[in-house]
Image (cartoon, rainbow, N blue to C red; front, side, top):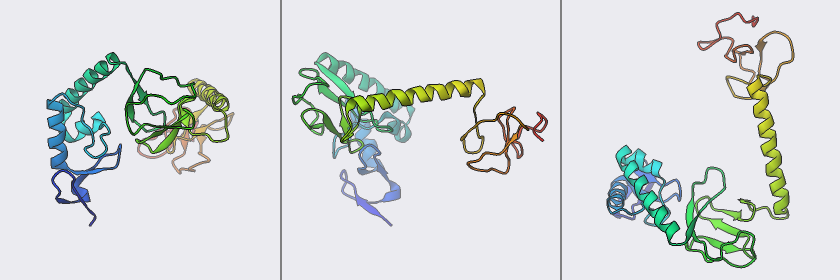
Length: 234
């Protein structure tokens, strides 16, 4: 059985009885986490990891402490955001997918297109490459602050921006075809399917699910959640 030493009470805790913070992967026993989090919220402080001081997402507090504590924490976060903005700070949010890391950065001398070092508040916010790259401790990735993308060595920011526009355009065109019904999603694996003519009973070429798909309704042809037959899908 895997164990870890809780940095709060210094007891040895089994992994299944502990809490691993998803933002930084540090472990705490549930009792220490709940006590620390409630104390922070009651004192109008942001709840952060005691090891690396990364702010803990509100949904974790809601899951471990309950909805009331999550709501109280959200009010605290709003107070801190307003105070920080009044003190001449701005919020920097990591653009990486699934990374929710947010840090405060001084507005003074902040210019995403400049080539000089910036005055940064968070010590973990490391700036390199003449002001182009920052290291995000939330996802452990290098981020280009000029085009808000993951580091792209050997590729210009203009090219990355061009790819973003192209992908956005492709997504928009796909969504239009989906809304028109010219493309439908397989009810089993969600892969896109097109049909020009023929029977409404369609087999997905990706998952080849035996229940097939009724093109008319978008439901499985067979099984408990089927279309019930008809629709020229026999």
